Length: 314
Image 1 (cartoon, rainbow, N blue to C red):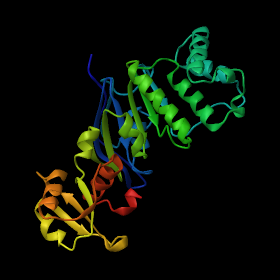
Image 2: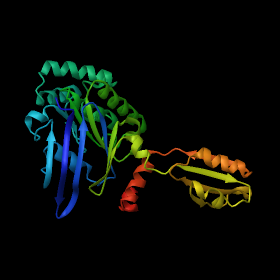
Image 3: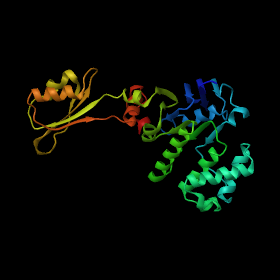
Image 4: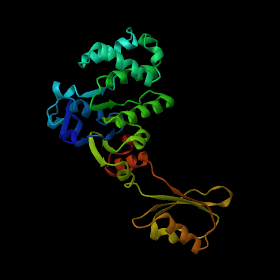
């Protein structure tokens, strides 16, 4: 059995002469949580729809479980689309059973699984309520249950955190982790980097339809210059002192006559080198702060380094 669940090989898609996706390749490996990241309008949803055969690429090739997407492969997939929609006038448990039946699950088994999942998601009390009575977060959980009811091998979630409050975002992160621990392969798209940083084994970054990064979170963070903020009451010229360690910027003067600087560390330098140089030069430090990079910083850096401009990172 191949370890590659999904493969996009140099796929492109245009709408009205404009590229939504251009020459994008990616692979999703069995057992991984893969984050497909980028701003709204970057091409994530178009790529996911091509992955499922909903859209046909203008160029390139898509393989799902080693085959062209079709009925035999899609039965092994659970898909949560970006456009939410479940039948508002149906009871919650009936909606879940209905979607289970569509995926070939016998009605009694779909009910048993549905009640069990509602209990796990703290929604058992709502089983007999109509969908229209639920809060947005509760309805989102129900739609996730309909995505998982047939116990798919591969779960694709398109912007699953969109519109959820922080409490329900945390709950959804727990659900994603639980699905991964149950052995399922997960691909989710998002424009919120914090979720991917906490959850993902691998990330793919896309901007204006172009892939700009494919690797682990640690590898993405490694693309960001390591940074140190300094504040001092000394009058020494830190630009000259710290230049051997990286790019130094003098910031606006701080309160009480202090001076602030930032250094983006160069290759082979670290924060301890900077601290030692300051101590040896008798610099009177009132602040020395190595800054931990986050995935958002990596994304901004990668987008700008690929020339996509500020409007893409807003």
